Structures are given as structure tokens and as C-alpha cells.
Image (cartoon, rainbow, N blue to C red; front, side, top):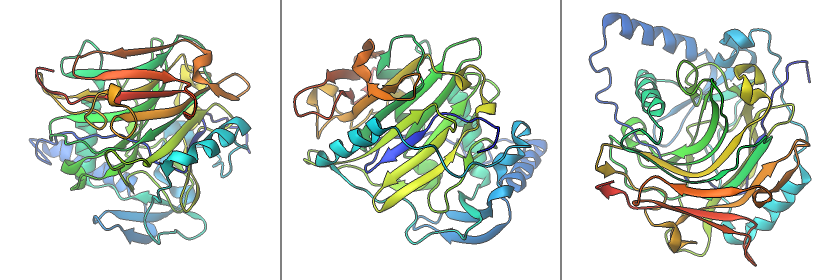
Length: 395
């Protein structure tokens, strides 16, 4: 598998995770200088590699089939001599068994572009537009301000005690709340290493009508090695994430759950420190290894995480916060509130165990949102938590 070590296995099994993100572009192009505009054009040429074949999704998005050895990730200075790893190690047995047990109350959801499969030797990557780069720059600034001390930023999560963690897992259902253009709302599984250079890897789905012209949930992620100061990237909008799938990539549409229904659309995400840091997805109709983040991109997080968070976060103008999750409080529970089930952490042997083997703490930063750790109830899919709230005026 080569000498380059990579870490954190992300695996999505048979279901769909909830998350939502919208942010104001403030006018594509805005008041950019000529130099800034030229820099964006340079980045577009840098990111949009020659395509052997292209697909257009129903929403008009273009997905290109790019030679795997010429993809943008390999232009990163730290990845110049990187050897692409096509296959992950075997998945931990405990995770596979746990996911199988959860299928009785969720609906399998097909994700990806219908009929799209790139030729062998290529990978599928969503084409980058200038407005994507403008949006990403603005969104990164919002992430930099996302602390509990930041006005307009709120959390409703369950967090692990400070420790040494080598993975995390959770199954999320999807709701699409109404979010205004100057707000964002998202559901997350976040692994982070708290240090002077705080590193985070966040897995979410987004709804972004300003950028993507609709209100559909889409596969989405963000990483940073220094708390969003100088490093970090959404999806594949900068070199870093190594794509290996010919079928599935960031930006594709997923289907939301129906409020109050007995079966919920959901996806399980696992992050496991093995030889690869892999984004792996198993859904109807198949199993996809999407890609991975090389260990070379990180410092402290390359060895282990010190904290795991499951739940939701929102940001908006003061006194005008968006809904979180389904827009309903955690106490309303299954079918109404947004949930995360099968909460697990990975130990040093990269074996997943139930999250309640360590201290877990529910927390919120506003009365407009709540989180609830249900624990392991009879008939429930292992440890389970709920989160969400309506937001609105005064939040």
C-alpha cells in the first residue's frame, strides 16, 4: 500500500445523514479587484483538469471524469510524491454488525448521479465554478468565527470527554429546514485535536440554494489543520482530498426524511484511524469508496483525536437564527427531531465500541435549541441522541 500513511476511515452504510448549510454570497463577484478576479481564474484552471468524459446532473451540475493521477489533490505541496491508495483495510467487524442491526428502522437511499460511471483509470469530480470559490472564501470566514463566543453561533451536541480517540461513528437522518441566505445550519460528526493548531475533520450534508440553486441535501465535508486560519477546504475546492471513486463524489444529492414517518432516510458515517483516512459510502444500490485525506495534511490529528462531537450547529445574524435539524426540539424524538444513532468511538486497536464507554456530555449554547442523549434503550439502535430547535427571533 506504499509508505505514505493515511488515516481515519469514513464509512457510510445503507442510509442518509442530515445536515444543512446555506450561506450568503453577497453577490457573485461582489467588489473584487482585477487582481482577485485573475486569481480566481487561475484557481479554476488549477482545479478543473481536462476531462475524458462529463455528466450533467438533473440540477445542471457538471461532473467530470479526470485521470486519477492528474486530479487536483496531487498538486498539494505535501502530496507531490503521494502514491494513491485504491483499497482500504477491512472494516472493523463491530461496525459492520452494528450497521446491519440498524436497517430495521431506516430506508435505504440511493445516492450519486443516476447512470454516471467514469471509465477505468479516472475519478468523478464535480466541476468547479467561480461562484463556488467565492462562496467557499466567504464560508471559511464564517467557520473562523464559529466559536461559542461568536454572536449568532449556536451548538446543540453531545461531546466526549477529553481523551485519545482513533475514530467515531454515527447514523444521522435528514431533514431540510428552511434556511435564509445569510444563515447556515448543519448536522455534524466532528473529530478534532485540540492544541495550538486545532485540527478538525467535519462530515456533513449541505443544503445551499444560493450556491446550488435548490434546497436539496448534498454530500459535503470540511477539513482544517489549524482551526480554519490558513488551511482547510470544502469538498474538493482545494487540493487535499484524494478522490478514488468513479461513481460518487462531494456535491451529489441525497433525499430527506419525511416528518413523522416510521422509516427515516439516514446514513452512517465512520471515521477510523487505520492506514487510510478514507471516505467510504455503502448505500443502495452499492458500496462506494469515495476517497481519503492523507495524513500528511495534518499534525496532531494525524496521530489521534482528543474530542468527538455529534449534533448540530447554526450561524446567522444576531436575533435571527435558522432552524437546526428538523426545526423541532430534541424532546420530540424519533420521526420528528433529528437523531444520531449507533454512536461509537474507536479505540487504539481501531475497534469500534459504543460511545457510552466514555463520559458523554449534552450541551447547548441557546434556549432555541436542545440536545438529548437517550443512551442505550431496549429496542433502540445502540446509543442514540437527538438535537434541534426552531431558532428564530431572539436567538
